[in-house]
Length: 485
Image (cartoon, rainbow, N blue to C red; front, side, top):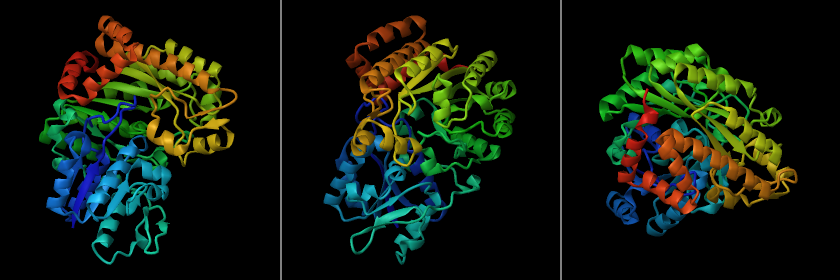
């Protein structure tokens, strides 16, 4: 069985088109590891954002003649995947299967929008292996959980969800060899992504992660996490990790044990948690252990400075806990940020201004503001569909509007479009001012902020940093101070 995986072009959260990926796609790296563990090793990867030449892809297909082509996609970048599938289908009859977060959001609809033969929703390590076995055998797909496909008569089918993997330690470590990790900017920065747990039990109405990872918290053991860190250190010379969990500190004892084991093994690393952790699940003891084991940055999810709005989104958080967490984090000496979203279902312009006012009172290193995106399958999407006075077409906004865009996906009578844009502009300005000061220092950061008021200059600067190896190296030199212990 020959399998070719493709990671299509990406867009940045700011809307920059065809951005260079910073690191290998983690979802594909896990799937490759599972296939290899089960004796399927005739595998290759094409990363469109690195190759920047689709002729390389078509030559690869002609030369290798894969039995199956697998493509992953995010909603925001789905247009790239859709165009790529169209071109592949013109070139070859090789079956195509699509996976990734977008499939979990739209499910069967993806087969109506593309010429793909199959799609895979949800957590896919176990279900994709079952699919590969059936695909290479009798092709009786009825028992393959998470699978979406086309029947012989032309209709589509969608199988039930595969049970989530309870013991995530059984999943092999992600495999990066085929990607040639040294081609990516993260390798240059001696950085690697890592996920130490799956699932989040909280009920935030806007969150789409549970569509693929579920609400049950499934942690990896400290030993398993540290083994991956040691492997990346020894294999690729990694010195810094980005922990991308949705709920790293839900189990405080486990989080402390990871810190203790990092120190016991003398890993001498730094790590950051930009994805956001619960501010009501930190203690001074945990933060000190994180600091001592190499944590240099942590981000907290707050989402609104108005308690009623927070309650309405189902986050189950008291915002006074955010201030307490920032104070404790500063006390132990870990740099930090706080995340906010503008556009919640109960929000008005005045409550959005409360978020900006609250953000200004925080002593965090910087604050983040995002544009809310209602993903299909979430409670927010259902509410917006029934209550918004105006909503953009789902097909359009999923592919074209990101969490850093100014264009709102929907409006309500209480919070119309013009006021949403006005609030977003103020939130983004506060974010840019604080993050540039943090990254570049007070003086250089202020100059960069003034320059960023020209959006064309700001966009050119982002692309230079994110999509150019020289720019990325230059940026890494500039921001070293913000990443020190």
